[in-house]
Image (cartoon, rainbow, N blue to C red; front, side):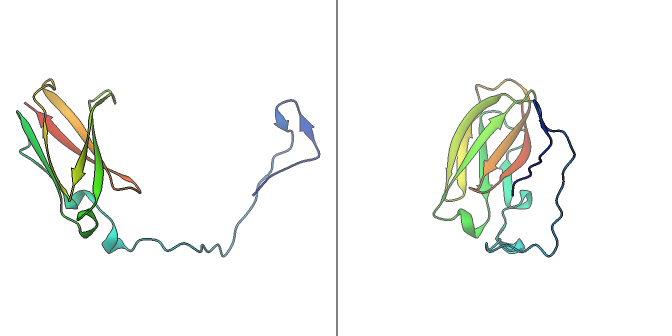
Length: 119
């Protein structure tokens, strides 16, 4: 969709423009609720962790696939990245300072976030 106007200035259109969509349908095949990976399907343990953090994804899509996990500190800085094979991974968190971290699991479509504490 494109919006255009005959009243153009140096910064774009001078008149406000809008469009309305009614009875909008798509041709894609969205995932059903049962196919989505949710935070309930992701388990981090032990939490708090000292040396090793285990990440399990209990979902049929995680079998025979690879998911990418990233760990971020409270400022949003990426501290590490790793792969989860077949829904299970153990990562070393020894190099992290004590504090709260966010684990982000990417299932190929979206990011799922869980918190853990590093002792």
